[in-house]
Length: 371
Image (cartoon, rainbow, N blue to C red; front, side, top):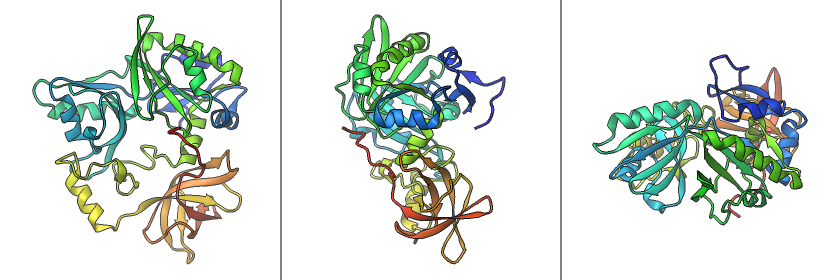
């Protein structure tokens, strides 16, 4: 994360973050809160695991595909099979490059109807995803970039139900489903989704109404000692769960196969971008694979650290690393050569030091996100 720039975009909640003393940084071209004064990553992380926290994730993109056959068109582009879900449900998927199988972006697709699909890509990649779809959209299908039209607030943690209910919004939703409601004339999409491993919701609100909803959520959290949380805690929470971050575990050089994200690929579909090259790679079974690493001593691994086997030979690289606030141990996600199953002892090179770690299968922390 860099220190930001004068050209960075700001969310509809920027003034709220400044008022809360947030430490701001550049994230995908947006000035976003990393942590808040009086909180800090550890306290904010614990609030989500134990009670409730809210995140501004308005930097995430928004796009809409509409017109006759919109859902079929989206299904022909992205990896997952949109036909396996019903209207009112959401699905994790990936936009891959046709020639290489590399991941342009991972995103959530919301099936509003056969003629209306709402997409939430990652901040910096929204324009590229939209561009690629617009270039091949059939006549009558429109792909619109709505990135600046919406704000998104994530409400995450065991008490998220009570907080969302306090705003009069529906909470009786199955995991990866959503409801569209009219709240005093303001359209709100309530999504039973999140990126923390805890039960939670993401509220998609018109940009000009986002600040008011944030204020109500802050008030509703007070009885539960909930906290506003920055993207620092969001990163430690998702790493504990082993969730991929685009640019780290997924990229133009790291395919769904390498990221062990084949569960989000509709292999039986007739077509999607990159299908042929990904199917060939899957059959070859020679690429590196994403694995979890649990540090057995003291030290914190970081992205880019080299991973060595027992003979000192390089076998991989760390893609994400942090100190787990829950475990109080260093954890990492890494791309490793095949033949290093869970239980294997490896060494991570960190600034001239060698940290011993054990290959493990994420998540590092057990939760029940689908409860």
